[in-house]
Amino acid sequence: MMSWSFLLKVLFVLLGAAGGYAYYYFVGCTTGTCPITSNPYISTGYGAVLGFVLGGNGKKTSKR
Image: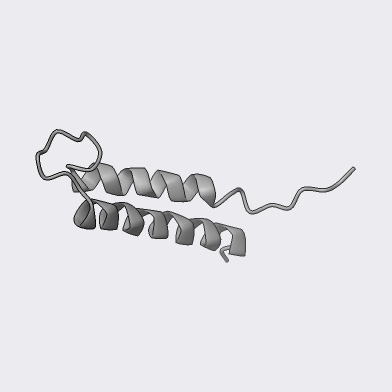
């Protein structure tokens, strides 16, 4: 059975990917000279990586 921290991480990655694609679609670069926002695959990938990083590791740290 999957843990909640794994499902939360997957959710953050999916939301990040959706946000990256939305940024490409709504803001994007029409001239094609922007390396990230002119390609939907690259902007979606960057969004997914950003979601992965912002999602954290899902573990609580103990105070010592």
